[in-house]
Image (tube, rainbow, N blue to C red):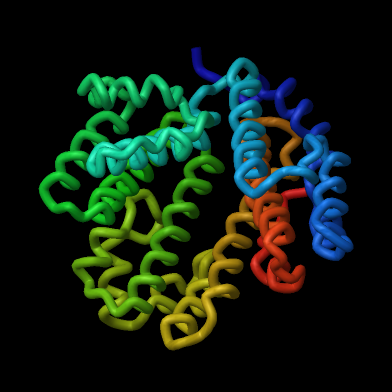
Length: 330
């Protein structure tokens, strides 16, 4: 049976109520201005976090990973369309597969690097690798992991293996957006792919790598094709390629970064374009866009919390952290 917008009424209402407790920019600024790490961390209890004030950096990382996995697990029984949740869980499946491929190649166990937030439990995926049943993994993941595994064995180049996995990850994201069938989901995935390709292009040009290397790094699914972007790099420049698109300003900052400017403003501009896109979902009372926006907002929040807490604990000045802090959904 097909899912209709009204099927999201209960879940959208639930998540709208929870948005009140999400981390706001104002609260993040107060955390950065706190007198010390403990005061900074304790502020998060008002946003529903456990007390993180006595934790080490590794304990903070683990606590935030558990919080993400628990959110996904809870929503699994509530979301009418599983593909909406899988848009976000997919990232952790591909991360885990990359970890296992590399750990297998160097004969080193990397259990502590695996995430519990994917569709496939870490122990299940590990067993598939150990028992040579990688193709049993769902979607494109199984075939992609098998190909990446073989590529790493042939080339001994983990970056090429990662590039292959990244391309399949974005292709599967595009498949999920098509299955969801809404313009909002398709637009979100396309913007993610465009942003990823713009970032890759800027970094690769700054490194002085050639077009062949760039071609390996680009992912499918964006509104601007890989061929168009490659042609632009060799012609009018990346700023012109993205002219008229939501990433126009970011692309100009990217061109400046390639010429020797800072990457910080460019990276923030890319992040904030996605935040602006998701903010449009706040005008919808209910529907899958509310869930997508909430989950993306939670990911941004967890990234911000990690950045602030680990930075403060390591003694990084608040102003330095503030420069790297992206816009928040709340």
